[in-house]
Length: 399
Ligand code: MN
Image (cartoon, rainbow, N blue to C red; front, top):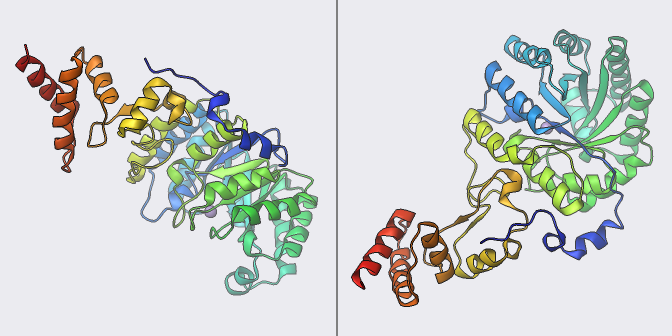
């Protein structure tokens, strides 16, 4: 029998709890899922309006707080998809993205979103080469667009695009102005994924000194640190985190919903979504629609996330799952697998054979193991059927 335990002392090391005392963790963290907006910006990914609707429904079932449904100005198809989602009466708030322009906000109004996620770039690089605007002009535009959205009864989240390459002094001025203009959330965007966890902690701590409204973090994965940077932002007090399913998004993608929500729960004790068990099915659905399969070694939802081959590990897990599993597969809708291969040991073989209703004696088990280890020295996968064949031949031979 495998002893299953859900969250317990054995899963989390005391270092984590010790460290938490020195952090500024908020009581609650809101999840904004942007699979349907930033996620769809993944090169080559397109979701039909029906697929968007189905993903939105599943995100709602799982319990994300905000679904960023799209970028209304982009196309009429996009507008239709967002409208379908806002008409569906989901529990989650529905957001649409808009540049700090009246025409973009008008498109968001047409979709009847609950709130508009405005953005404008704040780094010298973007202001000079892309926007061709001064810092003062950017702030004026941000204030004007916030007021325009509010006049039209839209709640505003305001993102500083490329915030992490902007001057911290300018950023603080920018956020102060937009929150004074009426924005209800301010978002720090690591648009090109150039932060490190320590730098993120520092920056969010700075922003928190002027923030009168919740702070959000939007992190990209260009150096593989989107999740670490998001968590560092939360450690410094950020109350909202932006994620996508399977880490879809521009270039190397965004922070992943599964990794962020599971880490927050297991490592920080902060519960965000309701239905963790839906994480694997949701990941599969989005992999199918996006035509981007999930690599087997992906944490939480990958095929190998709870698979064990090494004899030492299998023995450990069979005695007590926490020996080699930091969270239970059942929690996230996954399953534990014992894989047969060259690293397999007798405990694993016995476990699988017992499940098949076969009970070899010690000497037989040893012989089966020897044959399996030889077979494991090739690249062929040893299936349960093959193991059964081997076991049957050994057992019948000795009768
Ligand atoms: Mn982005």
